[in-house]
Image 1 (cartoon, rainbow over the protein chains, first blue to last red):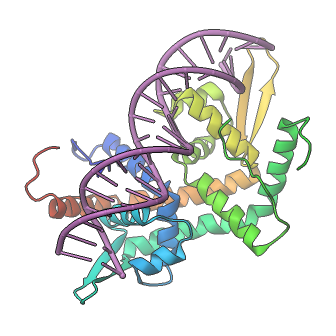
Image 2 (cartoon, chains in turn orange, purple, cyan, yellow):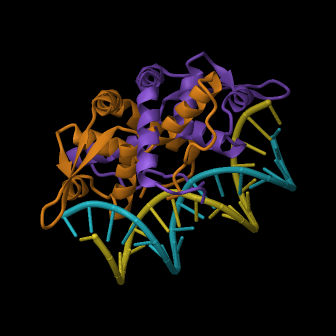
Image 3 (cartoon, chains in turn purple, orange, red, green):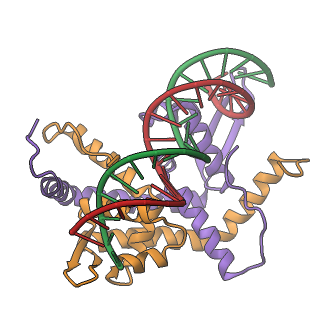
Length: 134
Length: 134
DNA sequence: CTGGATCCTAAACGATACTG
DNA sequence: CAGTATCGTTTAGGATCCAG
């Protein structure tokens, strides 16, 4: 567990709120976390279901991400004591609200894909003057 | 220059759009990028101004982040040919819209700080019963 | 089926020094 | 002041093995 643990915790300070906000920025700024939240928008999913739906995520990363999100109360973990143990994850109410925020990002991306593309082309062309095209 | 460059680019595919979206997730999932966009919400800022306002960011990271955001057309870079060269960065129109999305995340964080705190306390207590200090 | 622990490599990052 | 390049360190993350 190399996760950042709160450590010393001053009382309700502005500085403290800022620090926590910074920590949350760290958590939000995690593409896997964003994708997990996004996928769980469809409803509760098992570990393996998440693993198969999120292309490219490793076993370890998924576990790690889920642990972090659970710790922050974004999702809940429900263990079914079946013979092959199965675990279901679901968004909490705050998690669902976070999903809305993530959706805003997604919509922004979709809306501006053409702009981004052309911007990248222009930028690359301007910064690689003598590069021939492959 | 170890930044991720587009690389091979298939034609206008659904898969391609998905890939670009994934790339954007990568960019969005960058706390420094988020903070830069957030700061530029106040208006155009110089390099040194950004550097002093974003606590903890290194010279290199700020440059790198600004380059990436400029490449994606999120912000513009304006160089003033003064004797000590000064450069101003400002959000583009898509950048301002991205700021709105980022603000949604921020508001979510503020609104759920108490929930997050208590969730973390509960989680840590449940997962570190008799742990003094690592 | 989950998930924890371990090893080990590739990548990110900070510090530093150097241009315009 | 703003930016690039190089270097050395740290760390994140993938592969693998083991346990409940």
